[in-house]
Image (cartoon, rainbow, N blue to C red; front, side, top):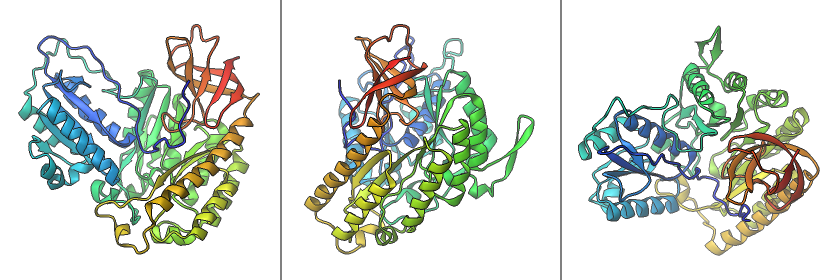
Length: 461
């Protein structure tokens, strides 16, 4: 049985899931969705609109009348992956519409693939629809083409991403997300809650809250209040999390910056309204590296915050991502990061080796780290992180854990996740006997009887 590899990329969304049913004569659009969960939500919104117009969605190039490629442009390696996907779609199908983050650079795309039908930027839904209409006219049948109340989702039925804002106000030197997706734009809180309510009513058991900066939610709206049910709720992450906790689903918070008001979320976790889980992109631990990144540099105070969170909610799980080999990173600064990681004792850790991104200010920084040094530091970092993970998971042997079932294979082995595990990016808990009657989406209690470096094994209680 495979377990999570230590180099699992923390920026990727789960594999998209498609409905294969198609009526005769129905126009079909293929979809390739690359990149992060935020891009996956954009794909879901595009496909919801297309389904409402009578299109069927296909994961196959050959069976589609045209193909949409939703691209990622965060790293140069991701750009290369996007260009490769566009080229493959052109070769296999011929009619290709490009959207997403890399679509913010149309000349870059058409310079490599001049035969694409159209290029649109991120969250430009209307332009994507116009391009689809031009390539494949809609042919709806209102008596057959029924759209689910929750819209089209590309994740399994039991969990769903819930995007609460778009854009980012930070100016990190290594990142071009604000250039591609703009400044922070928060959705009205009642719109988010209405979407979440519909998702739970449709069978979703876990809501994964995402944005570029979740803890800044509502800042651009000055935390204005909106009527919801019999009360007024502020557009603020604490208020939103408290309300989401009323729906009875697991609520998991991603991409949370450690602002002071994040401590207001921890009691909600201790009360069980929100999962005791925070995904915080620390990126580094050394103050000077953080300054060169143009990120908050008070790493010692962050350690104090972590200690305070654990005091209020001892079972909290902390996941983060880091960059090694940032321009100018010295051996002493890297050693400091390893010591910081040892002290922070983070539960789930992903790591990137720094690479230049076209348009990023970090490209012009002096003293770039050689590739072989970056690789060596990545290896050492992941060795440290793996040892921490192994010890933390070993401590769970004998404990009772609530898990959600993600998959049951032909041999009856159930792949599950605990409250400490997000889909795709964290570990799994496997149940290899006594799974009769289990269904995907069930939440059950297990006793942990074995631990690996990243995964657990257990039996139903």
